[in-house]
Length: 399
Ligand SMILES: *Cc1c(COP(=O)(O)O)cnc(C)c1O
Image (cartoon, rainbow, N blue to C red; front, side):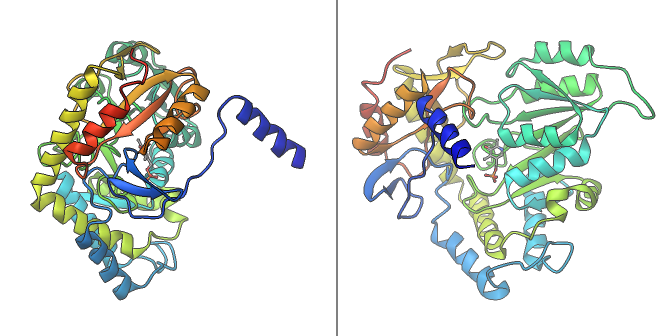
């Protein structure tokens, strides 16, 4: 056992892939205390700055006082507090759907919903850059998986056309799985085209809106602004909404089905009620204070226009390891392609020493040879802080 662990750790270190934790001693703000130092935080997904908003914190405290710290059991046992159903109604309203169902996290949602819907004999068409939790959900489903080139609708259509004929007793069901905003790249999926293909080939789309909720859409309700019968939308509460947990939005029937079939829902203690209290307060702020989203968009624009001169990139749809300067995609995620893992981590450390925290992202989170510095901008960042970042990046290699 000891040899196995130390050999594997040595191998990871050698490859520049060994990960360690850094501790944060302050709330998730534009500036944080990390490993005892004050640094500018360009790594958080707290896009709207809601995680430490006092009303969101008060929402959590209210729920904590009323329901206690822990849920004590799964929702199907004794853990179904009223506040969860209240939050589900608000989320359904937010997404314009009939119903919504909470999950304990985005990871739980993806590994629970995908296997509940897709099964042996089905075919899942999955974007090559999909998040690990989507990949794991596909694996658990036992469906056949066909990987299509990133955001490449022509490639997807070819593969859909070639997909197998029904086997055995029932017709093959087809599923298309994509992120709305790709978490490590920041580009947006071509949802209209995916819907057209889904209609043509009788498929259902499972759309992971983790980085789109609160950020995209006229009212910040995501890429799928109005419900569509071919799309199941999943979103998280832990990113722009500043809390913790996730949801799936759709029909009442979908909700009933998932309560009965999604194993990560059935067999896990319900999320703490305080997380639901925080999310309810956050949703209210998103609805009533559109100026937060406007500020986020201003910052995205400021950073994007500063970066286009220098080093930002996004993947070229359908072309593996080919990149372009970021277009008008409205997400809050930017990347600087470095390539080599060790070099990426050395650059991240150099920036940290200068007071700017940008995490280096390495395989297996991203494909081999595409290690990068990934940065996110929040509504909380001031003009000066963004200028400071751009100045700090001046020496980073240009593409
Ligand atoms: C963060 C993320 C998840 C996981 O959500 P958690 O609530 O953090 O577990 C799932 N999918 C995507 C695309 C993500 O970025």
